[in-house]
Image 1: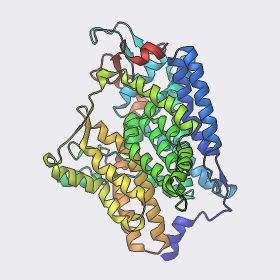
Image 2: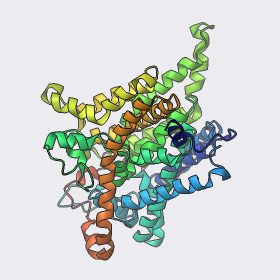
Image 3: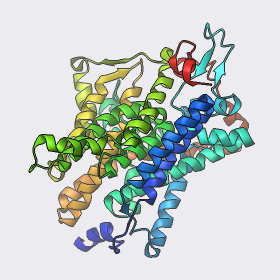
Image 4: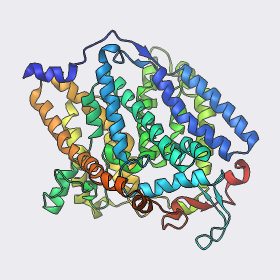
Length: 504
């Protein structure tokens, strides 16, 4: 049994270590391409040319300084493993509903409509006659960066081509995520990738405790994550199947930040998150702040006086890509999003005493059980405490009437938690601590029931979608302007700085 356990996590062997920055740079380009499209689609031409030049310079410096990551597992010896991981990505993406190939959860209605508006309308998307919904003309203002490459294809070849391209664009993003996870653990393993796909809190247990019913605890297709009223953390698969436009970039940016060896491109990479995934960007701030401070401490020379260290520390963070390029991306993205004041209600705090027991039970099943099991492995790891504190605070903050902030701002810390859990699991097996390793694996397996439900729902309803394409198209189509959620996507823009001085 001992040999079998070791084989599970070391079956791919150790190759001669090789490193490269090629995949980190590919991820930088993946984030930058939609920003270029946004600039030339929304900015006045002189400002677009200047902005593109600044971002290109920032991208050059970031790519020049990109950390080299392990690529030794991408070798001929692992061809079968690489193929298996790519197949997993294709299947997972297919079942997500992206591209309209399979069943789509109802959140896709709004996401389909966003893509349709971006394809059908001139850029910037402005609706002159918005009555009876608004008193004045409105602009479409949303964090829609992930759709922009597909929208370009749609403008050339139609909406169907846009959906197909969106599938492959998102697939590239998922493959980059799979690589970044593998490089972090220096191991390409289908087991680790499957663990990511199925990673979740123990929604099945929470649902059973609250409902006193086993109906939704195993092979079923119900949505498990609404069990704690007022709170929700989404499984990795739920994130992809429901809010892929925020999840994929949030995963990529979080993993890029973790991979960085210094602060030279930290702000630059983070700045892309504003136009890709605004709520996850807020949840990313504590992680970015911790990493910046950690690298300052590592860089600080205790043998020198404080004043002598200041120039060194400033050179680490005050780079062209951070200050000029990242500042440009961050400020213009914020000004654009601020133009939709009608969709913003600000942040407010929930009083813990009003929801104390629900809050405690929710946190225990969603994340605390993991943090307890991996404490000994990560008790000296700052990311352990930063992600834990973030996940403790996020449920107490609300943005608007729903629980979107809780669901989305938690994404970066959940990705960090996943990496910590896998690190702990690998270490426990290596150290032959089988009881602790099996206990942690069992918790992950129970958590995986949530993702199993999401996947089973796609399998269950996809045949009906394929046999009734017209009914499916009608069921997954809405007009954003006519929808009750219109304020999330449109705002009266005429007094906004962005549309007065930057937009064409």
